[in-house]
Image (cartoon, rainbow, N blue to C red; front, side, top):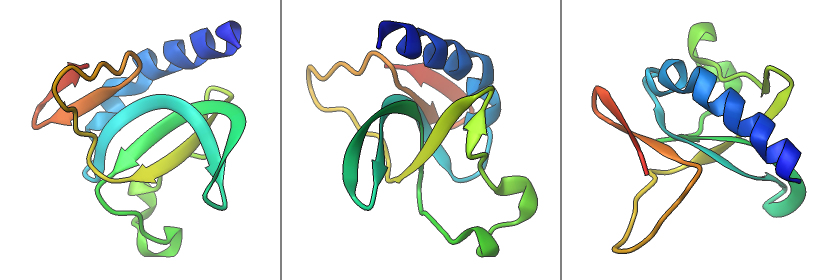
Length: 102
């Protein structure tokens, strides 16, 4: 598990700026993939978007990849927000034109 997380972390860091520059992306995280609303045991790169849309309704250049450098990608809808004292070691959020590691 630690080896998988390290690989995903490396991919996250390598592609973070490019992913956060996309218009609908709010954060990039490491978490477990969900299928049919159920959490699986597969770690993946999670890309948070403001609003999920069907792939057919998204311009080709804005479609998120299903995997990056061999790491599976899952897409979550919503804004990544933090409360007082919350620490998310694997997430970076889009704060306008700057990324902020939280």
